[in-house]
Length: 173
Image (cartoon, rainbow, N blue to C red; front, side, top):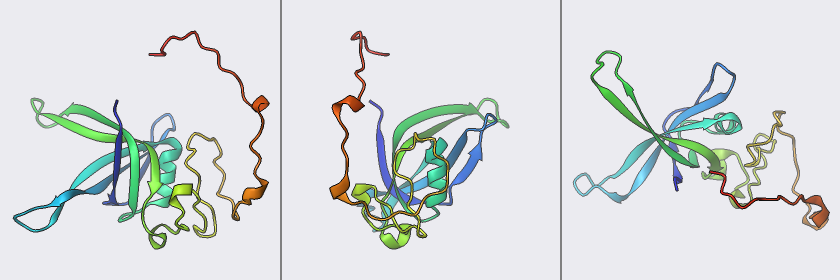
């Protein structure tokens, strides 16, 4: 299993880019405090972790986070290597987190949200609602103004709304 969950602060504004085929990517680094204080300096040290997000997750990070923002990322650890252009005999090794999910973790003042982090209910961001954590949707329209949901009028659907998935029992990998 390869799963990474990190919480820290962005060290710089996210860098949004597009690949040649039009896929959006966003690179950023987060500073993650270590649990213990350095005995010699008396200060808490931090690790600086490189992260890469893709598609709607990349656009979400670029839109709602900036340098100094607290962020929680969930993803997979990826390693790589490349040859130095100036010294062909030197190999550089890289370690990055490929981000699959992002959460607000800062205060309401930092993120502009209403603070209901556990419910993914991010209202009042410049009077718009931030997107939910469903990054696989294809809705690229601007966020819509929302009001609090009325829990008494929720509809849960019926069993007929679901499709049975038939399986031959084989593992897909």
